[in-house]
Image 1 (cartoon, rainbow, N blue to C red):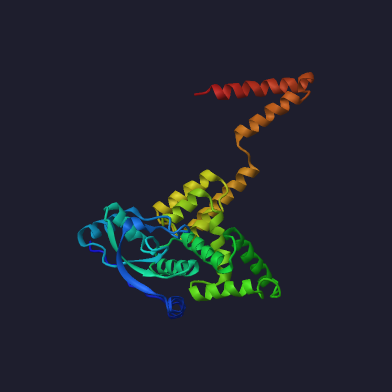
Image 2: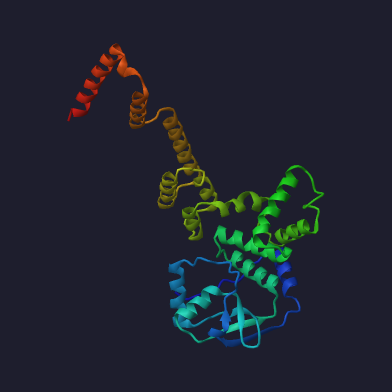
Length: 309
């Protein structure tokens, strides 16, 4: 398989935003030692599909790296990778010592913008990585710790629902958030808060499936409503194995909820028996001859029942 690097097809408004970012930036094309290229501390991608990675490795083994990686200069000898991590990892695996790069002078925000946009446009990111990448971009843009960004967004959501724009929404921070989402052109900030931030609170098994691209985030959010861990795992595995539609997953969720409700109203016989034994132990039935005779008859019936093959 010949590796063909996708041409970036960026929407017009994103093109303008990217052009503004890159305007008047010094750019050079050269070859550098791969050992002089470092991965960024805030990486957007965490999962690389093994089959696609192996195909890329084989392609580079046969044809070399057909498109330079994008890096930014840290000092005279070291560079930080901005985009092209799959090619970088493949070259590492093949022990290639020198690789072609485009060097641009970029600050932290600019580098993250380009990395995020490139990955999003090539559909390389899963929903969790996309969410984390946008949060990283907002953190740099607003000069805040990343864990404070969801709090800010939820405040904005609260204000919007109550039609109050005097606090966060009308502030410089609020306007900066709006600018980031307008520039990305992927979704509104409201949609991000309601549909993407909840992904960060999903259980580990669902997050893993999302990161590996095995299930859509809309389906994952529905599966996450199942409270019982074992039932949730079974439904997740079934949804992946059978490629269940969103409506089919919702139908199974209704069935599980109904079954759980019935279990609450009709406890299992085993639980009922345990309850009766505890009550008998505390009762005064042993001192009442009539009740004791009735109990003896019931015990004989129960003993005969459990003795049957």
